[in-house]
Length: 74
Image 1 (cartoon, rainbow, N blue to C red):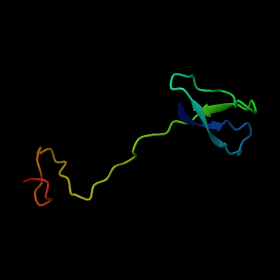
Image 2: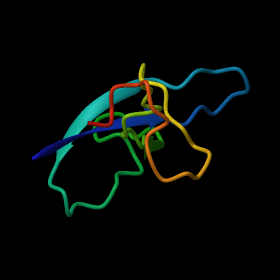
Image 3: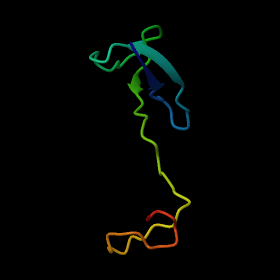
């Protein structure tokens, strides 16, 4: 089973959504109502690694190689 994050869909302006987790099989359709309260909900899409950064200088000038001095070339 996979754990998915869901949020309530606020019915009033300024109301904040509440987040919670529900375990479902991977081929189960996303829920549209909270199983206990019946409130409208939606699945929250999470994932990815975000922006990956490097401390090693990288040459993006299109030269196809190492810019030298960074220790990435033998």
